[in-house]
Amino acid sequence: MARIRDGRRVRRRVRVGAADASLTGVSGMLAVSELVDLLGVIDRLDAAIGSIKKRSRGHTGGELLVGMAAAQLAGQDFLVGLDRLRADAAGQALAPVPGLASTTAAGLAKRLSEAQWRAVETGIREITTAMLGLLPPERAARLCQTVTIDLDTTDVEVYGRKKGGVAYTYQGQRAGRPHLASWAETATALAADLMAGDEDPRAHAPELLKRALAALPAQARGGKVRLRADAGYFAGELARAAHFAGVEFAIGAKRIAPLWQALGGVAETDWVDAIDMPGAQVAVGTYCPVWWPANTRLLIRRVRLDVAAGQVSEDPRSRRRRTLHPDQRALPLAELTGLTVYAYSFILTNLDVTTGQRAAEVEHWYRHRTQIENLFRDSKHGAALRHLPSGDPEVNRAWMWGALLAASMAGWIHQLTGVLTPDGRLLGHGTRDGQAMIATLRHRLIRVPGRIIHHAGALTLRLPPTTSYWTPSSPASAPCPPSDHPPTGPPRPAHTLGTRSPEATLGPPPCPQPRKPPHKINASCERSTHCLNRGFGSDHRQHPPGYADIKNPYTALTRQLPDRVGITRTSA
Image 1: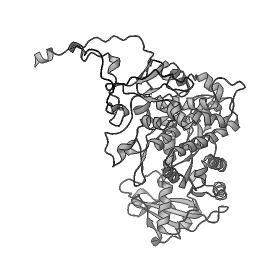
Image 2: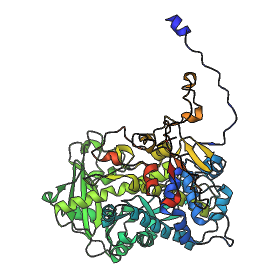
Image 3: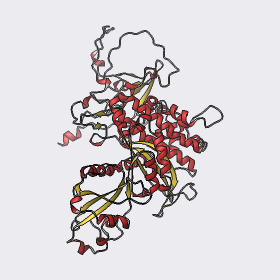
Image 4: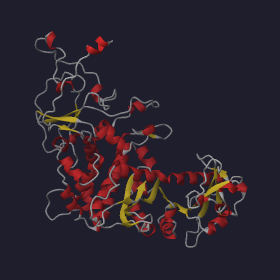
């Protein structure tokens, strides 16, 4: 055994050479650029925002937001990340907005007026309309049949004493508070504000709802629109605004004394089992707050708690303890052990809850209002909304929109590259075939090393041979077509076989290409010489029949691009 170990090959010394400017660590930014071109993101944002400078030179407002979104998709946390990406010469050839510096971005953000910030939402509407136009008609019609708008806020803690537009929250944290209205079915940010940490969102909610409705595409506005909001929006102003706009709403209610009194009028036979929530039941009470629409109904949900299993805390300040009935809330934990204990939630809605089954369906739909929490999570932990990097509130506002735009891009990629199963589910590239979050896209699609090769007036992107992008569904894995021209020249000597240069070994062997006359490249087309030679997929997982037809983000996006973009695929 010792001889075997002694006979092992000794590891050679590795010498670190000079940096190679043709290498980039974010070769997947090409897919982001293709998505931006496919939907016309920059052009549509610029058309809505208008000019932000007197001279028509340099970067525009649309390029500012897309550049910040691309930097956050690549994993940059602060404004200086724009400078790091700018220093990547090879990556700039693939970036949707090359050459954007941090100082330039901060200066441009301060130029936007309040009307231009509102116009960003108009640009989002046009982009979403373009996205719907690329979907199959039946898919687009299904998305627009019932539209759900979610309202919510999130706090972004900051530490600078001189940061503008922030304030202390009730938890004692200095924070900014993004206020968002999103389209739940497409994970798209429709309208947003950046408030201080001590501002109440209820004062801005009616206006935000109005702007969110204006940001919906025309075909979506023509369908049924619904609104979901938690108990932080328990106010009649939002309910009346939704009622006058023809929007069905479901708004969480605070556990005030009139609601507990209404609970006493519910008989035990009125409760029905909730959908997909064991131990939960739903009932309808007769209560309508003053100055709310007359057709408002009270929806009550109760969930049985096991005190012996520790589902109720001894601390009277705990969140779950506050959901108990007032008669049980003040009792010691030992006395609660022998009682039937429920946690109660109240929802005010103008939806149809005339039967127990319909009430259970409305409660099940309202329970999924946490979809906006996924959008916040993706904006914070996938993009970089967990920071407000500047002391100027306008720069932080641009940074917020960059994060929301990055999260919306992840939703658009899911809609464009997913496949609809017979039971109506949209399979994607994320966990359990769901939507891929930004972190997943960054790991599997964006932050992948690659080499940019300039040859014959064209750019070729070469990826590592072990990358997960190369799958049996990749265009590069297709069998070579029969060649009309037999190989010319003498055969290779035996001692030269297997001695290809490292550059030539990236990817599968190239197919023999037929002889063609020289092709003149159209230099006026943006990124008209990008070459694509790998795909992205999930063929290693078990999928239902028909899932093999899913195209990866690289392949799916480029197949939908018009011919004028000029993206080609190569197996070399």
